[in-house]
Image (cartoon, rainbow, N blue to C red; front, side):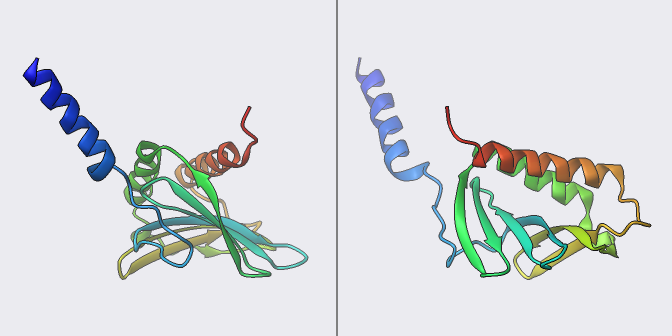
Length: 148
């Protein structure tokens, strides 16, 4: 009986104090970020999404420089996306092929930052990158969809 009580107490203490992820604000973002989005067109505006390792997602719109927290995804899903972008090894790519409409993918970790931009009509992006970008945008649609 004593062991069950101790296990329960430790579990409650871990939940209350140790296992909760830090909550960030738009003014206080961590140094590790997966940033992606699109822009161009008539207005030249861009929309970028910032995915954090704890699952928080922020949205920045360039015309008014507004940033808001959209919501969260599961921490496991966020970490998986960050591992995938690391596996793409953006630091080894030099892709600067914007078009009238363009898409971008940027990974920031500390002082390191690597970005690729594509969308030009004559440029075909690698299928791995295109699929990863589609997965990211699908994740955003899930977060922004109304809850049932």
